[in-house]
Length: 36
Image (cartoon, rainbow, N blue to C red; front, side, top):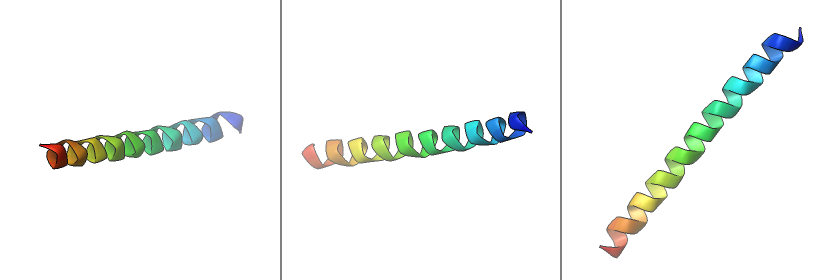
C-alpha cells in the first residue's frame, strides 16, 4: 500500500516542480525582455 502512494506523491511533486521551474523561466524571460 505504501509504494503506490509514494509513486503518486513523487509524480505530483515532480509535476509541481516542473510547473514551478516553467513559471520561473517565464518570469525571467519577461524580465529580460522588459530590460532589453
